[in-house]
Image (cartoon, rainbow, N blue to C red):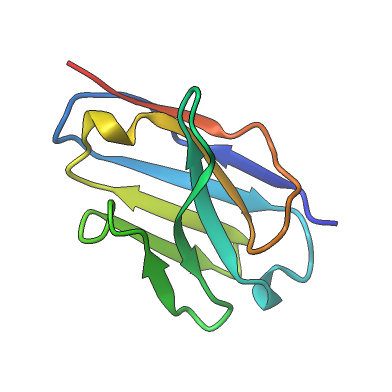
Length: 113
């Protein structure tokens, strides 16, 4: 099993930016495809972006052009750079191995005036 810890969330105004980090503890991190997910209160958890072990990326239509997922295998860390934030982006953000259902605490992102 791999332990994942999200950080970097906070309160930001519309149009602002945040960078989320996901630190992994496992030695096999470099072999896994990783994803960032989010869940708003009363809503279903959704996949926001993912990145393969080779660095290929994909994004949900709602964040395409605004968010960038990246990884540093030496640091065993996945990042989510979020720009041009909107109130609709408000949610708890989680990272995980793709197609794995073991969730951590996440990090809260709130976009509000």
